Image (cartoon, rainbow over all chains, first blue to last red; front, side, top):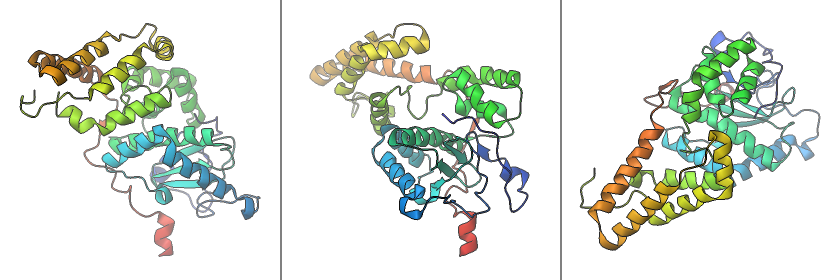
Length: 220
Length: 106
């Protein structure tokens, strides 16, 4: 899941609207995102561009990873078809954060300076797509309701608490309470997988079930 | 329940076999025990597989009933917890809109 972050950096060019500022979720630190008008390139030359490597890893994930393929299908079915160019952005990030979901622009940000290999990209894209999926299917108050944030981060209780503490200036007790309140419901909400996908086999089975859903629901 | 005309098992029989096999695998036992603190119950997948085959071979009404009941119980089990958030009626309106800087460029 997302590495610990120091909290969202302030944008440079203008004071953002409170609502706009508050739309980013969990794993995000994007100091120059708005100022540079999109993806920053950092110090490396464009020959070994982080962006090209990031795009290459991302494409492979989107084409081959069973978790991601199911999430993409489920989102399309929910009316949020994902377009690689529109909904993903490779950028340089502060700290050791791997990525984040920006609800204000409907974009998944991938921290190209911190994603090192294919397996890592697979995990980050899966994680952020879950946020995007929740955003697509529900009214998630990412910043005004800690319980909602806790819900989207819930897979393992202690990890959920850490994720919340990384991005909200609240006490550990408040974070724990939020997770405890929602844990039972959110842990059992396994959409769109219908099960906990412990590994790719489970994810493939889940995808197969998803593709079969019309037959399933019309025959029970 | 769907009419007898046009009904077929909710899943292909191979799917019931695959789920039964996965359920009984050592890896699944470990995962399930780690998460829930108890062994998984796999017997129902075996019963469903038998019902599915019986339907395929003899179009048994009992097999159909048993399968429907079993799958409905599964669906019920996934819905017993109320969601923390409200589901949307339609996707977010701005999902497909161009990015703000793209609008400025145009």
